[in-house]
Length: 114
Length: 117
Image (cartoon, rainbow over all chains, first blue to last red; front, side):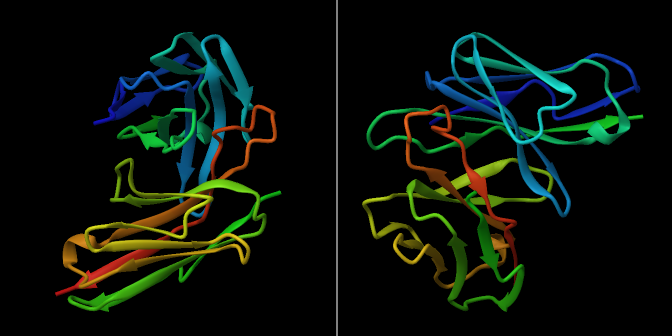
């Protein structure tokens, strides 16, 4: 079974703090994604990565950065957390190649910025 | 730009009923379509993946169909149970145009399903 894990289920941070959200997958997937999910706005893509050290902006990258130093790990960084970044953050991964492409999600991190 | 719409936004049915959830998308150039389930406060669980060359996929009481030319997919749930209560999301992945869009999904807003005993 594919497993995508996220470092924390719940996180509370103060405004201005630097926040790291970690995601690890165990299926040797090339693609990894970070989304945020807010009521009424649905799932929105923040950043994604299609290879080690490669990253692409999603729909809402402002205020975020990412790091992918190893294939299995994709980190989301909030350089200076703000209250409007309070949200549910979801990590996902998928493989490439014929017949593949199913995207698998982690359990999510509920981040509250006060 | 791809847009995905799910109808209805919410559905409440009695236990045992068969039901259909609808998903439509505006750009038929897709690689695959995926149906997910999300329980409150949790991540998304993949239910079914349909490749663009397929017409349907089945898993247990679930059956998903795909009509790419008309931009539609349906998720059929047979003999619904209270444990099926959740939000159901569909998402489409664009056909690989050679760029770095490969792997990105566009999600619908979801259908909130309640199955009452």
